[in-house]
Image (tube, rainbow over the protein chains, first blue to last red):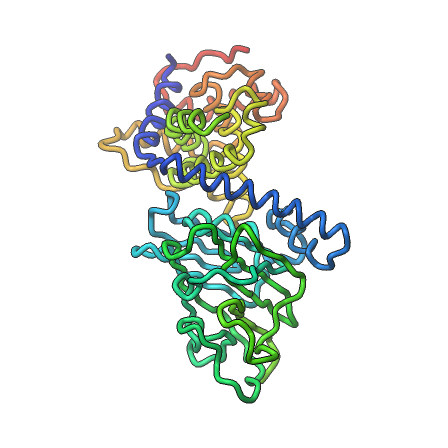
Length: 259
Length: 163
């Protein structure tokens, strides 16, 4: 054995000893999730070809893996090494995902940047959060699975800025009355996700839409066995008070227009 | 490939592949991340694994592509790709070894990959050519240049490349 071979072997052996493989079951679970997503995208692709306006936008972004035109470049910094175990931060231009020591994740979305769906989806999956992230379309279940408020918590007011979200913490929409003012520019919005609270057979659905000078992200909990996707961004506030409270997706809206 | 067979394959090869990717990338956490993601894809696309007849090579190639893709996406990709991260903390490395590891990190990524595939994975030049998509002559040139760059850090003269 040459000295070069020996040196390389020692390096590799040291690294192999330090490697901490996640459980095979976790890898298989994530693989199954990825396979299901891929099939869903293919199915949606068929719908798009059939004339569902906009659904193809999301597919194009996903399939392109972040190189599609118009998507902000991402510079991920992966500080976590294992699936669903280590704390750490993943930072891209569009979002920051922090794995907390208590098992929750804090997701901060830069509302000025269009999300790259595949990146967010895979990074959420890495932290054990099954999610379907789309751009230009949004998927939801009717009825929505219960438990959304245990899975996601979003502060209503962040740093004094107006944030258009229902009071999902208590399962209530904001009081009826005059429509809120036009939202002021919002830089970042944060939510905390508790994957342990996600009921079996559910996923988080994120839909990212380009709006005037910004991006809008809607999110909700879906039943993986029954959901539908639309290319229309959910509107908020609701048109009637009879809207199903927890079935409504929470919405973060940002535009650069002045109030 | 069935679930149990895959789990066995994963358990048997994960750490070895992380070691190989570490030697290729010079970054322990990146190597582990890339190999994990490659295994996730392997299970999701297990039909391809079955058809490839060489599952470990499939995962290694996929992990390399994942790591390379991250370099490209990263603004500091060139720096990461050539200088890489801090050395893995190894108990009591000798000064010679530290110098060797540093030197290896400065070898261009494709040369490093060829060196690892040839010396660590025991592939032939033709097999490396097939795995990397380069011509055999290119592989030989990469090996020669990589070994020349490392020669000052090795006591012996490396044996010539054989097919």
